Every structure is written in structure tokens, then in C-alpha cells.
Image 1 (spheres, one colour):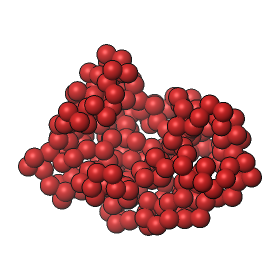
Image 2 (cartoon, rainbow, N blue to C red; image 1 turned 90 degrees about the vertical axis):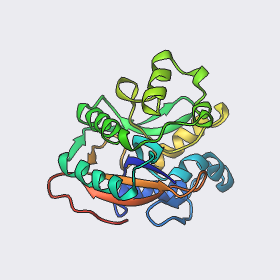
Image 3 (tube, helix red, strand yellow; image 1 turned 120 degrees about the vertical axis):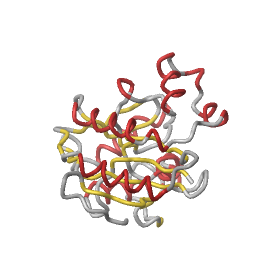
Image 4 (tube, one colour; image 1 turned 45 degrees about the vertical axis):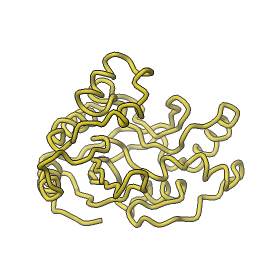
Length: 235
């Protein structure tokens, strides 16, 4: 089993519901959904191009997936997660935008957000004692030959190459999109997520996701509100 600390809006949030329909899966309920209708993409195309983010569920990574370190228990992780959520006050990203990151599309902050960077850095550091070292296979999956030296150093030290100044918060909406389809994909996503693009994004919850076994879909184990009033909720 692997665990991950993610940002995710509540299951009844409009963005969560829109994204779940777009991906064809709700990580809160772990059930397949009917895809949002698109005049430009066929259902099979959309299913193929959203396969990777569909498995992970709609989220923004704070602490990348990890296996529990020897001697650590799920109960200890949950207790640390409760404390983590309670110690951080909610905040708002002033504006989000649709952005292409390499071959895939995601919603990202329009401008750098210091509170968001700080939240991610705290998550990386706080949960590092719970992370088992990466196997050689795990390292190879990250294609270290394509990374910068600093990213390789972070991969070795923290189990993920995109931490601290390499971190870029993103809410993934697609897997790799072929060059010839990127214009259509952008238009489709702009229409599907029009109510959210250019609008603020409230960061008021954090989620503990679980992957029961390698390759299985990730599901939401717990969703907690940020702040001193945090009380544990089971998703």
C-alpha cells in the first residue's frame, strides 16, 4: 500500500464534481462516472487521454506517493496527518489558469503563491519520516536521466524530484496529449472548466489518499479541513 498527501476540494465542491466527471471517476466514491459531454472529443479519446489522472483522482500533490517506512504504522500516519491539518490555516490562491505542462494540461496558480509553496514544503518535511526509501525500480520510473542534477538530488533525498524550489502546484486534467490534439484539448478544457479558470481557488482542505496495491486506483482515505477547528473525517 502507498499513501500520498494531496490537496483536494471536498467531494461536494463544484470543482471536484466537474473534474470527477471530466476524468470519469470520483476518488471519494471510487466509482466510474459518465464523462462530461464534449463536441470536440470522442468518448474513447477522452478516456484514453485522461487514463493517468483518472487513476490518481483529482488532486494537487503535496507529498508524493510513498510506502510506509519500517516500524511506522498507518495509525501513526493518520495521527500526524490530523496534527498537520490542524496547524495550518486555510488560504486562497487569487487566480487559477489552464496551463500546458510539457505534454499534459492542468489547472495551476496564475502567479506564484507563497502560502501554497509553504504548505507543500511543510508536507514534504513533515511526512518524510514515514517514507520508506525508494527501490531501484521506483527510481528508474522517474527517468532520472531526464532530470536536472538538483532534481536527481531531491529524488534521492526526498523520494520526489519536484520539491521546494522545483515544486509547481498543479491539478492534473490529462495525461500526455499528442501535438495534433493539443489545440482541441485546450478548447475543450477551457469550455469544461470555464467557471473556474480566472477565479480564486480556496485551499481549505487536505486529503490522505491511498493506493491499496501498485497500479490500483487511488482513493480518498481522509479529508480534513485546515485550521485549529480540524476534526477528522473519513471520506
